[in-house]
Image: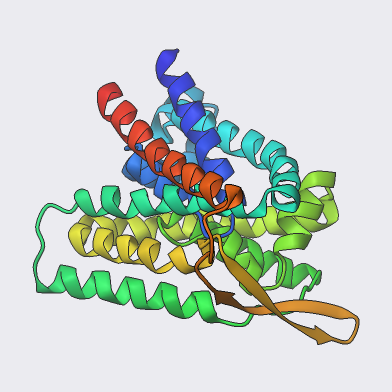
Length: 299
């Protein structure tokens, strides 16, 4: 029972991370030691699993798909997403700089702990790290699209977002920002449980999750160090979007105001807001250290 409670708590952390632009649930899965098992378990949702289920072989079915592992993790993710969305909306409105500072520290620590899992650094691994960093930086400076509630577009958003959510270093929420639907999906629809928006998103997420898990599992098994290096680069390159001291560059399109970029800056004076931001940054950094050490002890 303790094992499943711990998995549930890891799911809670993953769900919270998935709501935050720039933070990846896959990163949390990786540093807590459940990433490979999660991908392999999702990959097992295949034709064999369907045959076992529909022929009434429930015991074999639960063993084949690692049912109790999946249900523990995804229960935590689901509960966290729906509860954390409302809290995050409040925190961003009232404590914007401090929230970004906490997440900046959290993700900064993640770079080190993901890179630490690489067993051997060579030229291909270094190049993978640089490529991952470059791609994340390019994504960071892309201009977001406009909001779109078309059912097919929401379905595509679900596929793309869930792939991003399970990739360490690539934030599903940030991808939704780039696709123009972060506010619509992660704040408005999740907070009000709007099924017209959530249903096509969920369908796309399920299809994307099952299909992509096979590809990711193969890549991870064949090119583990290169994959980890690319993911560490993703995480490093995404730090720009999390920097607490930035001003939004907006542009008006008809009756809509859209964020098209940021002006980053360093605080000019060491006031109370800056001091608290630094404290929250340190807390975020230490949070990952605590999570990683706790995960290692449990293993």
